[in-house]
Length: 116
Image (cartoon, rainbow, N blue to C red; front, side):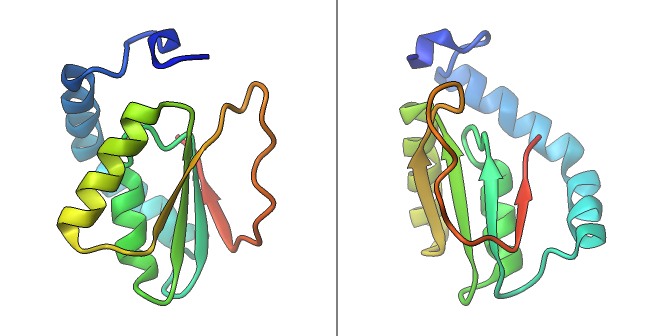
């Protein structure tokens, strides 16, 4: 499957829309993560991370001793996430190209996982 298989696409306008959506729902996501016990030092999977707005927040929660495994099938979204992570000075996000329709979830020990 390619990026063009996304219903709304993976173009820059969609990145902006997803950023706005993340900002609208961010407080609710942070509440859910707190209730789920997401914490410093953990390894957390962001399954179907898209452009990784949640991945960035999760990387800040787990801190430099933790890590986020950000998985998506869109190379454009993963490249956008990698760029924003570098700009933010975050080195604890590992992006994985993964199409869950055909690829297995990477065999990595996890403390928690997030999927929206």
